[in-house]
Amino acid sequence: MKYLDPKNDLTFKKVFGQHPHLLKSFLNALLPLAEGQVIESLQYLPTELVPEIPVLKNTIVDVRCTDNFGRQFIVEMQMLWTDSFRNRILFNASKAYIKQLEKTKEYKLLQPVYALSLINDTFEHQLPDFYHHYQIVNLLHPERQLKGLEFVFIELPKFKPQNISDKKLQVLWLRYLTEIEDGTQNISAELFENIEIKEALEHIQESSFSKDELEQYDRYWDSVRTEKTLYLDAEIKGRAEGKAEGKAEGRAEGKAEGELLNSYKVCMSAIRMNMKNEDINKLTNLRFEKINKIIQLLQKYGDDAENHLSEV
Image (tube, rainbow, N blue to C red; front, top):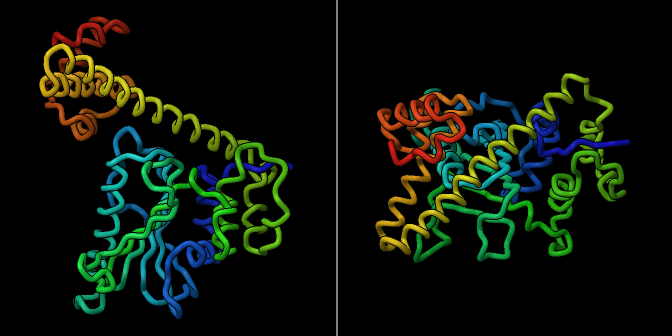
């Protein structure tokens, strides 16, 4: 029996976006809820809070819900860490908190919003911890908290079960996310011991998906690979060219020119992906005049256009 990767858009939403009792177990295990604050029931909410991140629009999987206390939970699976994703989390949680005023006109009735972000990437390279919990606190007296927004970021590549002695259910859910990949056949018996995780495993059996769903599953991975390549290539080129220019013409000037050239190349890649000029403008901060010039270069020189960016 083969299993599909639970981090894929199709599988993640099938498990956590269609079965509230599984999402409830997942959130109770992973969130830092105080004693007596356990989630008892969940109701799904629309996820459309903020426009997608240009270029990385397919690498994010999200589920949004509210519980019996009125608290809101935003759960996002992100395949690649970027500063844009971090800002998106802040925006989403803040907007969810504010939108409560559409139903209740009293500030005192606003309920907390928890943002849980599962990152299939490493972003805190200097820290060994995989679990990062953020609150709004008094810096001199961290025990003093402004309640309303809380953020949890989990770096999945850092997770190692042997590093944790307690929180067994949390460990099992994280093992579910990290140990199962596309085509996995052998799964630890420990994961089948918990009834909810056993059910979650049943939902990602390859045999339970139709041909069309499997094609959708594969298309998601194709889009993730394309977007990762586009983002990482642009980042690597920008750094390398910025360093080269910096050595030749001075660090400050080289960095500026390298970043500009990087923006041009990201713009060119985005044009080839048929992105709208408005989205390219948000992504690169290039004026529409510059974007149109790069479009003309592509039309004039085709695959050799990159060697003529000096004409922009």
